[in-house]
Image (cartoon, rainbow, N blue to C red; front, side, top):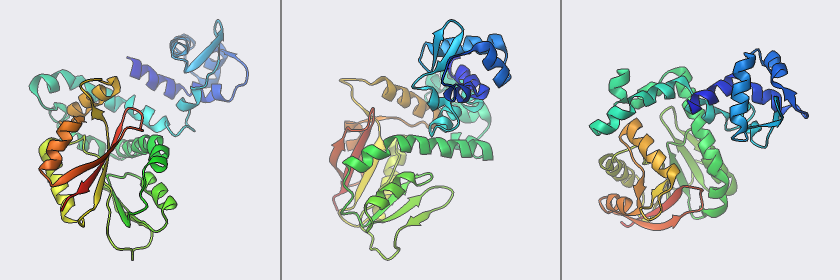
Amino acid sequence: MHTRLINALLKSGVCDVLEKKETPISYQELSKITNVSEIGLHKILRYFSYFNIVSEEKTDFFSKSKYTFLFTKESKYYQIIEMFSSDLFYDIFRSVPESFLNGQTAIPQEFGVKDTWELFNGNTNYKKFKDSMSCITDAAIYDVIENVDFSDSKLIVDLGGSHGDLLEKIIEKYENTVGINFDLEKNHIIGSKEKPKNKKCFRIFHDWSDEECIKILNCISKSMEPGGRIYIFDYLLDSNHYDLDILWFDLKMFHYFNGQERSLEQYKKIFDACSFNIEKVYNFISGGILITKKNNK
């Protein structure tokens, strides 16, 4: 119900209105501006004031909070919030019990599709998915650029790079590096095509089973020169200190794709099967992990 209320909050446009107001405004007036039911809007605003998404300055009068902007159409996070509170994702979770009780995703059977990715093939769903992935990348770009050294990389390939936002920022900082954004729709080369191939960057493996990850890595290995690196941006499970967000993503990845979040030990087993060594592990991304791997051939 919480995510459906978020969906209602977005559809009402009330956060866009509050963000432009410098003084508190009554829910009755907000109802007139947004053309939303008074009683419904009042209950929604009161509920989200508890989470500080909006502020109730005095009884029945509301104003923006420091988080209100995130729920406006001008926010770069709007797309991801809209997608995960959408009708599609609400319907997707109806088959959660079947997925876990039967040991594999029940989404294809529930929707009559080959796999979950097919649900994103429609024009509307596909655009929302692509835009939301860009939002996730945007949240991590600064940490990646500031903390990871790509200076010795002559060629970087971002596998599943969506719009190519991260790769573009890397190329801006390292002008002598060539970048290839590799995704389903089309590939885009950033920089001079004359630079020799050397290092490549790929993501993300939590959508796939161990067997599929090994196939992907072996395929990648064939196009890499000795010493080439793979940078994987994924969550890392720690059995000594579980993180709720990571556990939640682990559940979602299994329900969506039969995928999973992995521990360092699980990654080691996969890389051992593909002749890759773990070179470095970074924990600077909140709740996430960047694993740098080195081809030992």
